[in-house]
Image (cartoon, rainbow, N blue to C red):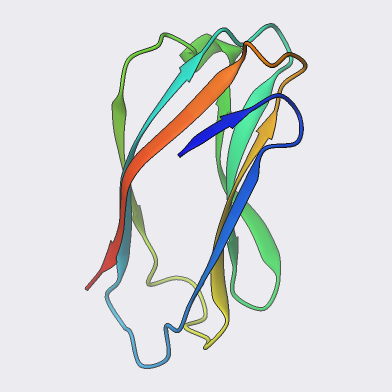
Length: 103
């Protein structure tokens, strides 16, 4: 998944009913962010919550592994994950790979 500029958004809905020890894992990298630009990961479990922000200090064009324990969230049937880009130029990139939700 590649998001760029200020309008890159990817949202997926997952039925998490009955899950108790779920984790979200993925690889990400950011490139060419200027000061004040960022990309976010948000979780919807009845309300949207920003759980990760990648800013210009992380824009090293190197893949990083992320693991998020989801057990503190409400496991609802319309559970959502959303990646958003908040950059100013189409040459700014946020990449997300190998997204997995598993127990």
